[in-house]
Image (cartoon, rainbow, N blue to C red):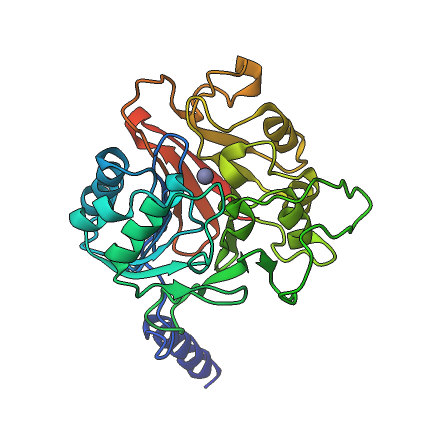
Length: 350
Ligand SMILES: [Zn+2]
């Protein structure tokens, strides 16, 4: 009798193991993030395990960047359309590619921080007008706290959450009247108020199970301080798309220390971004394991650039090599690769 009972228990366990869970589907494919080289602009393509897509920024105006983005989306990621496209802010290296890209691949939904009421001296009407024409005025204005729904079912595992934590100069939980410069924290360093549209950048935190990725667009120093003080709204992350192409007016060390990235990826150009203070801040970050750059910064010494093998494009006359990040279906590890160089390395999720 005793033996029969234990046989029955084993059988039940085996059956339980074999039966699919009725209400939760586990991911079988990776979550992929492509950092497309637009030579000092931004274009980050996220593809979920179920094939949904989100493009954050579209590079510069013209055919070069649109062509590179469409190539990755259509031929590398195998997409037929871009489901969601977020324009972090109105600078030409982010919004510029929209009209040309929309001719190469259908883009279903557009998001931004709101069309400007008046044009600041850093904004050019032609790119905003071209965007309005392409989107037919149907873009969605993002506010801190908004979610961009990428997953077909909330029951899909691991859960995926794409959340706006800053937009329009406001960070999550703050009132719209909050001043830009707000002293906070022991190491607070005042910087002059930034009057450019960079402060309005949409900042996105992606969580996939245990894996966390932060893309802050071009947010600058004062906003970065508010993102981590008094409350750390970003939290520790696995991968940090370095703010503002690695320019030193962004990448406040207070924020970088607070988010403790393991892997940093800089979407710089040969002569834009990946600046020395930012590079030093990243290198000094206690848990950093790797720094990647889309381009070698030709204005900096080798010691202020990522190591050989961590740079996708060495020369100014480049082929536009992209960096690919793939998070395993269980989100416990991820791989960063430079496919054109056949380089890839794996990291454990924190
Ligand atoms: Zn930019």
